[in-house]
Amino acid sequence: MSTQEFQVNYEKKGLPSTWLRNGLIFLVLGIGLSAAAYFIEPQRALINGVVAYMFVFGCGIASLFLIALEYIVGAVWSVPFRRISEFLAALLFIAPVLALPAFFNFHQVFHWSAPEAASDAILKAKAPYLNVSFFVIRFIGIFIISWLFYFFIIRNSRKQDVSREQFLTKRNITLSGAFIPVFAILISIMSLDWLMSLEPHWFSTIFCVYYFAGSLLAAIAALTFIVVSLNERGYLIKGLTEDHYYSLGGLMFAFTNFWAYIAFSQFLLIWYANLPEENFWFINRMNDTWSYISVGLIVLKFVMPYALLASQPSKMNPGRLKLAAFWILGAQYYDLFWLAIPNYYKTGPALHWTDFGFPLLAIGVIMTVFCIVARGKNLVPIGDPKLKRSMDFHL
Image (tube, rainbow, N blue to C red):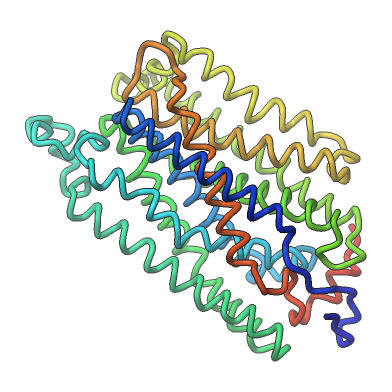
């Protein structure tokens, strides 16, 4: 179907059948390997489950943030891609399922909840915040609030496909203005609860920004990979230009540098102050084989994406964009693994075969959810009044 009002050439198609099939294959493989990991290395599997959960949650809530950001700043170039972020934001509904194993083994995952923590002076001081009841309340509250914003923003966007009403855009601008500060609180609480509290004796005032930077970068990478792949196959609006691609590549490049700045700032301040309550966290990641993983993080998440996206032509090249996006998604998972696992395995091999089922599970969840949510829907917000202007976008 096409829209004469906006004079854009869009034909509604279903997603390639191989996408859902491949997603289900990854999902089944991930579930099988992860289940085996819970039997063989239950403690390590639980922490890997937290990594997979935080990866999926981060992609979901950061995708909703991208939607809100487009509305609040009045962006034009990203309108043809917004529906892709809307589908990815639906990950917020499946993410809590990935957190269930940790809830059923709470004391094994969160040491601050164990009875012996009552004799620890530091944990006792943090008890008003770090306690099981308040933790569960925060968890439930985060998802209820996220789901409500998702429901109203996405409903208005999809209704506009039929009604073409301008007031629906105005409603979403208002909702987005309310969501942006709420998002900052929600993602900060989740990163504190599910990553930083894995080592409850550690202090860092920039950790929440660190997780935000990585999650937003992953959401942009997922958006870029899907957009380029669909556009190459003719599933999006015909007429997208290199300028649209350049904007996606520029965002990935910018947030790669932003993440590196935050990561280096956190390391530099802790290294320079050299306080025992802070530096032990990095020392644990510089011992034994973890030192190689730490160096690998610099290479995988900064050096390689930077090299892939540094030049102007690379930001317009579809193949380079897909490679960079795929690389960044893998690097984000690697980063979360580096944040979580050394808290429990400070010595010995950094990697174990039981680790590899969980990234497959996360990939399978993302692909399957995306395909199911997108089924039967327009891949482009054809009723958005800015769509025609977006097709005329030039840098």
